[in-house]
Amino acid sequence: MQRPLEGIRVLNVTQALFGPYCGMLLADLGAEVIKVEKPGTGDMNREWGPFFPGVEGPDKSGYYVSIHRNQKSITLNLKTKKGQEILKELVKISDIFIENFKPGTLDSWGIGYEELKKVNPRLIYACGSGFGHYGPYRDWPSYDIIGQAMSGFMDLNGWPDKPPCRAGSSIGDIIAGMFLCIGILAALRYREITGKGQKVDVAQMDSMIAILENAVIRYTLEGKPPTRIGSKHPTITPFDIFKAKDGYVVIAAGNDAIWRRLCNVMGKPELAEDPRFATNPLRCKNEAELKPIIEEWTKNKTRWEVANLLLANDIPSAPVYNVAEAVEDPQTKAREMIVEVNQPQYGKVRIVGCPIKFSETPIKIFKPAPLLGQHTEEVLMGLLGYTKEQIDVLRKENVI
Image 1 (cartoon, rainbow, N blue to C red):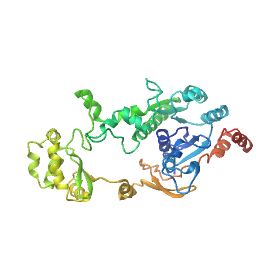
Image 2: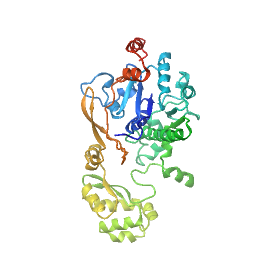
Image 3: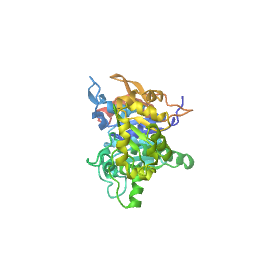
Image 4: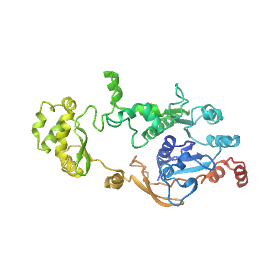
């Protein structure tokens, strides 16, 4: 069954998580994604755990497997002249080029945007970096934690009496990877209209600032930077986690009507008219007094007892899950968010599925992540016409 991006070829020379996450999204959507990796070791995330028991070498990483499904892997030494020539040959027949090297690195190797657009004027050159390809910090190295720190996000995350806290997943990389994918899709549309490729430049810091939601407008209007407040919402109350008998449960009363229904379910209808809590601004002002009252009601019930009572009365609520509970939940299974692949050298493994659902072009095919260099011969011989003898020479010269 055809998928939305079938017929689009992507050269993915990225490492770590930012770029690979973007490449995975494009592959899920049907693009032919050719992952270009360093001979011998491959992407640096091949050294990141968890690792498959009993598997050694560059194909041992479960981390790599989790973000490289549906792709091909070739090895190519981009620091060599011959490796650069082969890359340019592939660029001629590709639509998209993704890189997340330090800005200027590929320019110095002769395979940056200005050079590659000469090779293929229709090429969409997508680059991801910590701080972008211009600005005073363009040369700074970065990982996810840097983007979370420099954007102000980390200072918003956690509890008031604790240090700033990194989010539990690498959202600085993941969000930036999503924005890079969005930029690529928009550039494809522009190329469809004009025939012209272009450069797409996405920075981690920019991406994290873009998701600060109302924190920025609160600062620009009020002149005071927001900071950590735990799990509660800064401008809506009650909108928080509450203690239950077996963990925590979320209650999200997003307006006064929901608040009144909550009061009734708790058996405290008088709270709806209490001068401390009658309106949302008042509830926010007096949140410290309100939370213990709600927790007095929740603490002797299980998470699901609370959630089911509230949901039956059209009050948004949910248990706070751990990862295992989320993975095994029937909603997760119904939406096919956990899929099974037969990973070479290991066997069956469950990984995250694709969250984008289509009515006409459903994403049902999930191929395992490639072994390092698994498709080198296939790509060089099938796409570029190299002979087996030529490939043997390239191996001896450490080009592939």
